[in-house]
Length: 325
Image (cartoon, rainbow, N blue to C red):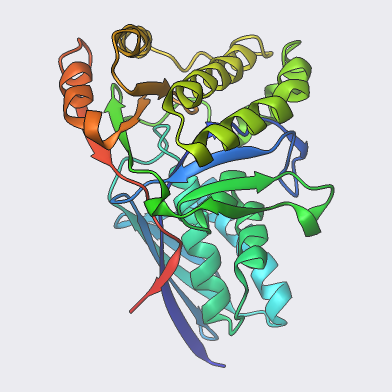
């Protein structure tokens, strides 16, 4: 093979029960399982071209040539694919997002889900979903959840072989909308990869992990029976627990901004008045307000009127990572 190319597209996801902290940083084996929803309308599209004439790997992200840590992370991931394929070719990687990167909208999840599929297929590997999910996990833990479609659970497993994600319900199972409330579109100061390594320094992490199976069960059951009240309560609790760990780590991580807290309070008060909406925050200041589709317009009006909100983007439930022509 002198040259071979493939293009794939992956969606970011929003976790209802969060992934924070690893048992193994190199393999990205999580401290606890997680449940998420893929986000339709948001995507990373990545083309990988293996080329015998290339002297090294290259990375273009949103039209900008990348070197340093970004390229090193991609090259390390491509090393895994090279080992699986049994060759030593270098690759040209071109990737673009239609949403802000490193702002708490899981850009690494969609990026490495797309990269895993494009790189493996271009290398001649036809991987089943479970194996592709395991591969994506090696690039970014949450990327394993962006490989299957719809509502997804990541089984933490005991080793590399059994830590992967699978769909627990199809996109059409529940008509939910994620109103993504942007209060800052810039890069966060501390990325998730580094943040995971700090989780164990918080005295709260062990209690959070110990209680995770209970939260997973509550979330899974509420999701499957479409019980929004229980679902929203457990999603908000889990988000608060993760950020409590972040805030009590050494050094502490404070992702929230004043507008973040205002949104969280407004959503909680609105739900008490009957609005089917609940809020969750990933590793960043922006807020994901999950609501029933029937409540999406009212939810968007509510959060869009709050001070500090730059933009609200509403998206539904997304499908699988997939190849594109």
